[in-house]
Length: 168
Image (cartoon, rainbow, N blue to C red; front, side):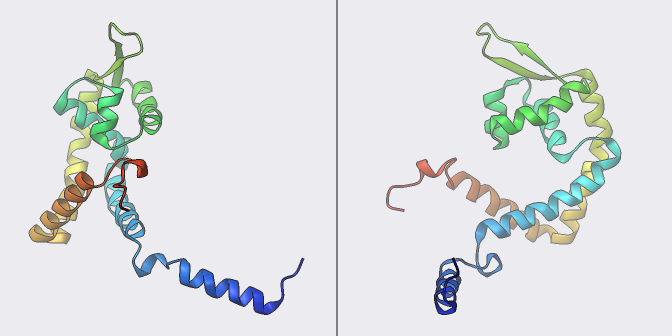
């Protein structure tokens, strides 16, 4: 069924009022756009090592914190368990991490293997180059300001919309 031209124009005008152009103020658009750009810098730097930036982060977290449960690791990374499981599979296949079962068989701890330590040491210079590149481009104040803003926003925002204050 064809709608009359005026009705289509009216609907389009209503959509134009209701749907914000992402470039005109959408915070999510801006954060994701920045994340894609920063991620690309790290991914390009890490590409020769065969480890993605997400995998590097997991290996590094395990190196600094030690073995931990899937729940703890997903919480520390701000990543849902399904995504974490999918990201861990290649690391397990490469022998970089392994699972140990706890007394409660439903619990498993993710542990960095010796191969994972070697991979982390091998990838560290590439990660450091990417880190320094971003730091040089943004400068001391820009980098510190960005990191403080991101950390503060992360701490303030809830995990789910159900956890949002009722007044919103």
